[in-house]
Structure formats: structure tokens, C-alpha cells
Image (cartoon, one colour):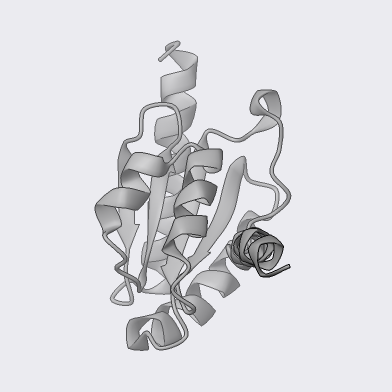
Length: 147
């Protein structure tokens, strides 16, 4: 019985950790947006408390934009499950490069792995909009040129 519990508990915790990544329902490969806005946050992170409300307010204006919003919440130390989620989202290399840091948003081209912007608490609402608009335009230009 203990052996079964030892096998099931990690799987159950992994399910909770993946759910805590707080992404919208994963799409199929054909309809996944190319631009990923990945928020790296934690409950204990001071910069997150400044950035998140500002970011969430601005993102409300981008509800119809062709981008996927993903939250990597490392509040409970579930790096393994979050790393698996990053692989599912196609941003594994960028996720690994963050080394568990929090308090920022990365705008990532899923196809190339390029980080198009790193949004921090120093960004105003206008700066966040500018970064999002620029990243969306870069993606549109790349797609228009077949890149």
C-alpha cells in the first residue's frame, strides 16, 4: 500500500502543479498563437506585487490579440511540474534560462525561442502596451515573410 501511495502522490502533486501554472486551456499545435506572454511570479515576490496588477489591467485590452498567456507560479516550489508545462508550451529553453527568477513577463516567439521583450515592474502601463504592440508586430512581420 505504501508503494502505491509513493507512486500516486507525485503524480497527483504534478497535476496540481500544472494547474497552478495558470495558463488558459492549451490549444492544439495548429491554433496556438506564436507569441507567448509568460509571467514568472511567486507569492513572496515583491516586484510581482507591483507588476502583476498593472500587467493584468493592460492585458484586459489584449483579450482578442493573437497571443497566449501563461503564468509560471513558483510559489510552492514545483519547478519540475513547471518545467514540464514549459515544454508543453514550447518555451522550455527560455524557462530553463530564468533559473527560477520571478517578477517579470517575457514575450517569446514560440517558433524561434526569441525573447522579444522582458517586462519588469519598472514598466508603466504605456511601456507594457508598447512592448506588446511591438512583439505582436514582429510576429506579424515574421509570418508575412514566411519566417
